[in-house]
Length: 145
Image 1: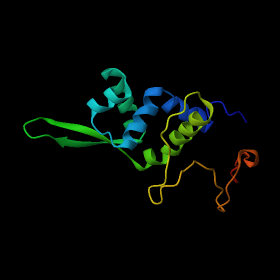
Image 2: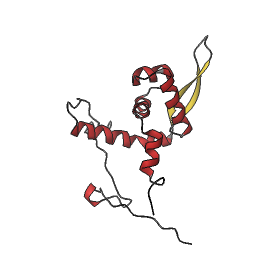
Image 3: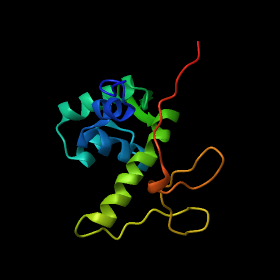
Image 4: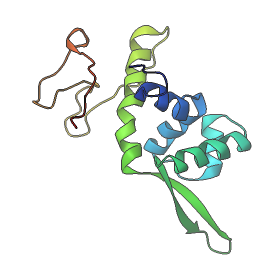
């Protein structure tokens, strides 16, 4: 069996492996919904923002929602879907890694809104156990029949 073309990491990177896609997802989580705000906050051209937003909508991570300002034409804003919310731990894991391993960490922290304690991304098995990296395995699921 070869992972080439089949690996979920490869497929995800093909879809979301650009800096602008990751930063658009970050901004969508922070509450950005309008096209003008995305391209300004992410620091890309309007064409790049438009392309990434279209890709993220087509992939089901964002959805378009129409809105209309008084006296203006109808436009679309962009909001996270359930799939987009499910993707956010990937973004937060990158945030954590950058804080630990890159120079000049930011004073920003991930925290639990409920109690204020620091939060971190963890891997947990379906039986509820935290799984440290040295105990994580990958196996091929074989279909019967």
